Length: 306
Image (cartoon, rainbow, N blue to C red; front, side, top):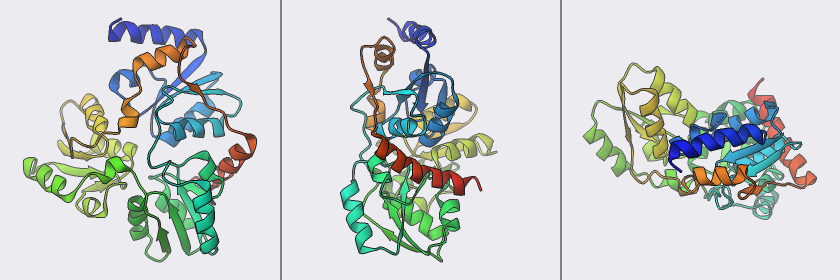
């Protein structure tokens, strides 16, 4: 089948099989075109909780599918490709953080949404890259243990200098690959372009940015800006997506190495196979883990929407 033919068959099958397809913004364009919802990981989970479809297919990575299941336990949730993990989410486990918390009992444990469901059960509250500053400002405790991304934690700590942050060595290997040399090279090649970066990048890269924000924040800024040239400091698919949304503007990846290989392994064929009952992985969580992780997320929703 051609791409168009495969997409048409997927659209037919998802309606027939009562599926909602979620595609993270880092997915390939041909996948996003067949999705019911696209965006950041937590936003997709919220969207999934509102749909009437019994079956939900996550085109993303494992922790994202787990978050869908946490918020929608009554739905059958699938991960399109079972090998799609997240190195950052897998860097720290429940036992490690439980031991760290014993060493620092007076610290509130704040975990990034990019963590496993098990890890969330031993943390106090969850945050996204867009909500972290707002939520942590509202926490009564001055002492914050932020995991797992030390680069995002560093960025947040600088926005809230009156709190004490303890960071562990962890983070997104894709964003961490970008260097100051990459920034200098990109700015030299595109002197009129604004630099937009994700806070998972190293501090020295973030310091050079004209805008720092989440994936959706970067896209929103670029779409609304009067500027016509942008260097995009997050996964390369975002520069591609923006070129479709704003063809009159120019978007340049900060580095050709800003590629999340876990995101890229999902294909249209994976989606097709799940819909016909011949692929993917159903995500299951025991109720103790689900409720423990849900408590962490509910606290985020409570403070984030207040």
